[in-house]
Image 1 (cartoon, rainbow, N blue to C red):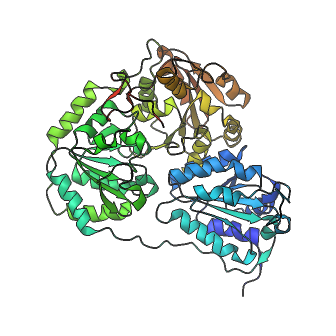
Image 2: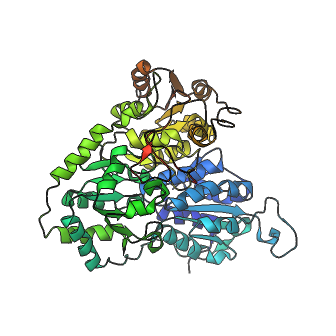
Image 3: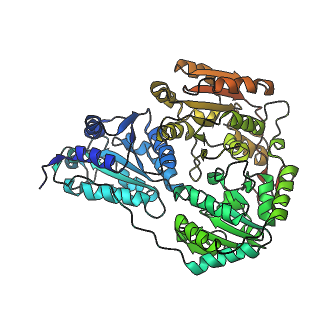
Length: 577
């Protein structure tokens, strides 16, 4: 039998064997044993951030780039509850992550006592986290810790990925346990897709006049992007991407048909409207992709939907041909079958999409007047950011301008908080993404409102000297909701303009020791972008001043089909989401 090992030391060794390279945390009393063990072992880099929510978003960004679950830690009470928003973001966007929280000593837990709290900062985070995790587990018996950690990492990666929370009381962390040396876990092989359904989907694509692939975030969470690209290249069918998959093909690829959905490229939505056959890969077809008119989205076309989660198919959009399968396995099976037949040229269909793109250019949509055009700026930013491993967008108008108009190259990723839609995501997620990419440059794009939710992480950037290129589009308001108020609340701008303010972010960056610059007019953006990339190895903050009333267009006119978009068409009802 092996010699006993302190439970906290076992946790450190286990994480290292699972490929965890970074643990993101804010120190607190109930995780001191764990942090000390990681420090003494020296196998995993500890990244100390300044708010637990930032730790949870950093893990999210890291895992999306690395494809392996990373770890965030927090102490009991407020530390644990501060993780919850990031846990939810990982859950909704299918990001594999493990969250480890410290808990009070077992003898300090209230159990069934009719009190609100017994131990200082005692909080039942397990019950709080259960609805937004694949599992949330309290470690009661120290000897069960190895099995619980194995369960956590398996669950995080199996099937549809997601977060798992493990709550470890402080006395458990300090208890010697008998456990073998941890080993790297292997996952079971997924179930092979139904060959007949794969053949049926391919036949429908082959015989359609205007076939289209609709690709969603499941392609990335399933680590299937390369297999999907291989399938696309074989089929030669044009592709539209959801917000979570605008990076599936480089911008210059002739098969890339743009970004679809509520704020999608107008030509991409028209392509959906014209398509007679859709193959949907890893997209749940939520309201931001289809609009409210699901019957209009479904009408006139055959839809084949492939997803590892059966519950996501035939949910909002009914009548789809559902293929429950791991996307990598589906693509391998489809490639094997597709290689046995010639695929028709799609020149007329591709020319029609190109004509639509020319008729509705993304850079002509914004009502920016003489102010900086945000869509044009995104194209300019892309042109100088070839060294960036990823673009990480916060949540708001800038997020949609980025999805509409970034010109991504092969290998560049686009990360954002999709299902949770959490403001404050971008800065800490960019930190995690850069660490995952070996400290490569990452471009962060945020609005002035969202950036203020986690701006304390500028200190993390300053301390680590990560080469983050921080771009803040400052329109002096909460722009997305202000546009909503303009549409539905007779331009009453309470809390978006009235009662809202932001600092000079260049001065703020300088206080943290980060170089910065502000651009105010279209003629200044070239100089600003040159300064942003003057030293690719160093962080830099560029503040871009926009017109306060600049709106994101196009936008689905709510209640209308996907192809009817503002400002040409007005909504017929107030959007509910």
